[in-house]
Image (cartoon, rainbow over all chains, first blue to last red; front, top):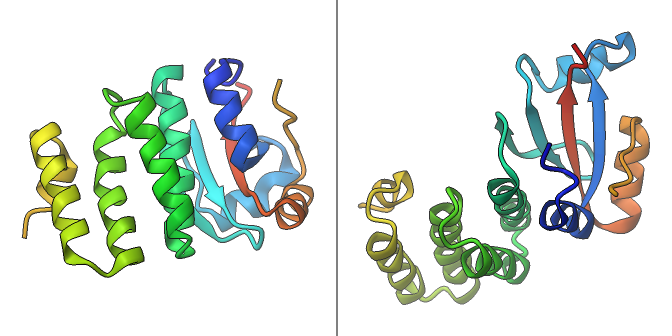
Length: 146
Length: 30
């Protein structure tokens, strides 16, 4: 279980209201239906209206869970155009978890967030070049090719 | 220790007042 680990609980506590729903309880059925939930572990990041902003399935060890939460919250902020917050979260992932599975995603969206904030294409290209250099075999490196 | 909520509506309401997001963990005890 990853939740008791300090890095994981700190990441959740700082940015999220944690909610556990037992899918076997009849009262959970409308929520299971709303989010088309079919497989556990299943985690979602929601805004205060219930809109889903990010999701993932599957177990993660603590070293991966913390950066996954930070990337998820980074994406939620990115989608709300809170680019400073997104930049801070993605930078944190790259600083503290540079070898995580989620570091390439952080590098990709760090570049996107900086570009959306500055409107300078150099910010995007510089960040994506860094992605290609540091994580050459990542799926995110494939996605930044154009 | 994390303060897990079990109520969807309470979690959304708390997210609104705190300006945080909700981390929803669907789980099955079996």
